[in-house]
Image (cartoon, rainbow, N blue to C red):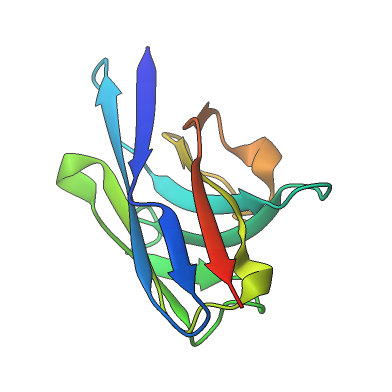
Length: 126
C-alpha cells in the first residue's frame, strides 16, 4: 500500500509565499507522475500542477497558477514540492498531492491518479 503525506500548508497574506511538500511511502513505489490538485469550499477539485518523470521531468500547470507556482520533486525519493508565490485569496483551498506509477496521458485529470494524500489547507487572507 502506498501512502502520500502532505505538509507545509497554513495561513498567509495575499502576495505572500508558501511551500507544500508531499512524500510517498509504503510498498516499493516508483512514481511516474506526481501532481497537485486543490479543492475550494463548494467547488470541484481542480488541477494545479504536475511533474512527469516518465516524461523527462516535464512540468505542467493550470493557467491560473502559471508564473506564480513552481512544481519540483525528487524522483528517487518519491517527493514533490509546490512553491507558491504571489498568493491570492482565490488560491485558498485544500491542496491534495496525487501520484501514479504508470504512464498517464492527461495530467490534469484527477481520474488518472491512483494515489492521493489527505490534503493540507492553504488559506490566503486579503
